[in-house]
Amino acid sequence: MNARQWGLGDTRRLATRDVPPAVLALVDERQGGRFCVSCRALGIETPADQPLQIDHRQPLSAGGDNHHLNLQWLCRAHNCGKGARAQHTAPLPAWARARGPKSRGQLVLLRGIPGAGKTTYASKAFPRARILSTDRYFKRPDGTYRFDASRLSEVHEACLRDCRVALNERATPIVIDKCNLSWKAIEPYVKAARAACYEVRVVTLFAEPLTCWRRNVHKVPQAKVLELAQLLRQTRLPAWLAHTTINTEEAGGSPAARNLDDHPFRHWPTRRDV
Figure 1: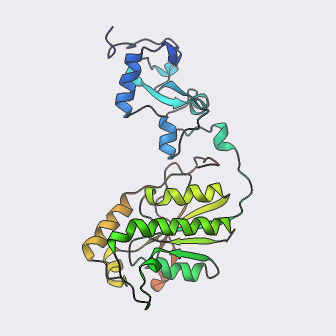
Figure 2 (figure 1 turned 90 degrees about the horizontal axis):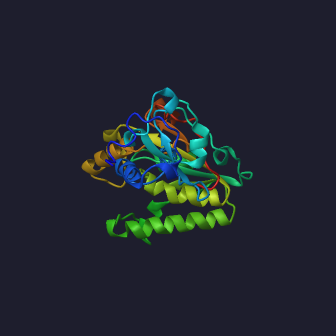
Figure 3 (figure 1 turned 30 degrees about the vertical axis):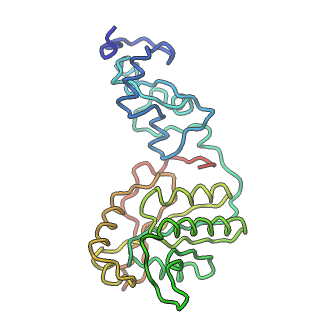
């Protein structure tokens, strides 16, 4: 049997166990691994109690077949929720519709390149909040600021540790004032907040990179500011994460709400325990 030709034109309804292992291996190779493509698009982990199943990208009822190029992996919840709907339609598995316990507080994650106005915005918008900023870890005993790249990992761990302490103390709101440009930087805070039953909100502060470079108080080089601005533009946060973009150049430099293009799947749900 040629695995690459198997299932071509075959419209039988087969269970995952009936698909030859060599064909499943081709699906793994095309996807880059064995995972639920819908959960991956949501930016969440597939629950352990949701086994993976083979799904047809183009439904059999719409002319699809069992060829490996028409197969993909879905968790049981997404596969059962999909049916024969169009591929772009977001499924609503039961675990995603379930509501968690009542929120005990709010965690606000500020995002932005140096000079975007994060610290100013935090003090004005959240005057009574517990603000945790990575900048304070670079301050000397005499109050002067000195950035040390070799301490970045240590500083980020300290900030996350202080955030967990604040969550345990039920402080609210808690504001995290640091760049938070990538999902990797944000994810630990989101997980910690969800575990503590806190609502999570991301606020991205937007301004032209050269404007940020001119007004950043820590003298970050222009090339680095432009590099970070490109990373900010390229990073897409999970659709289920509450997210607001604010232009700090409007209204004479004071923060003014300006939502940029919404994520096309903003209506997709989330999990309680993400």
